Image (cartoon, rainbow, N blue to C red; front, side):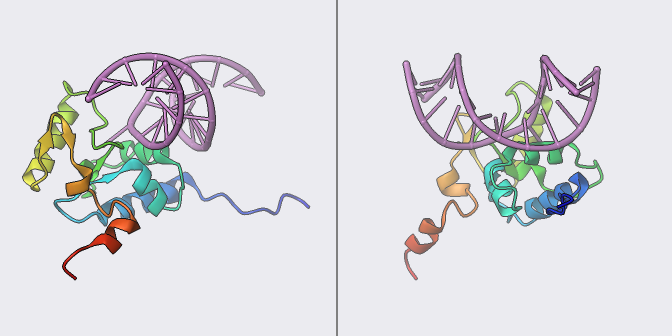
Length: 122
DNA sequence: GTCTTGACTAAGC
DNA sequence: GGCTTAGCCAAGA
């Protein structure tokens, strides 16, 4: 066979899909790179998500600041402007940082399906 | 064409 | 609780 396997999607296509997924994060919530990658169909391409956000155009209205690392920590150095900017945006949405970290159990966007089933009061 | 880097994650110490 | 190592994959030099 002349290599008639699945045509790998162009990077731009993947990036756009990632941005679309990030846009689906509700305000006041945050998602991890791994989660975005999984929702975008990249599986364990957490790094791909980071690259996609880096290639993100400046005029885009994608809430990149709602994407954080696993464990609820921001992917930038604490002394970086990007870090402060992201933290400011998160606080503006009602997300508080505790010790430089975000409580995923509180602000995490659909941690796992188990949690949805655990949802009390319904 | 090879090597290094990087907006990552999970596991180990 | 935090640091280190290994795994992964794509872009840049």
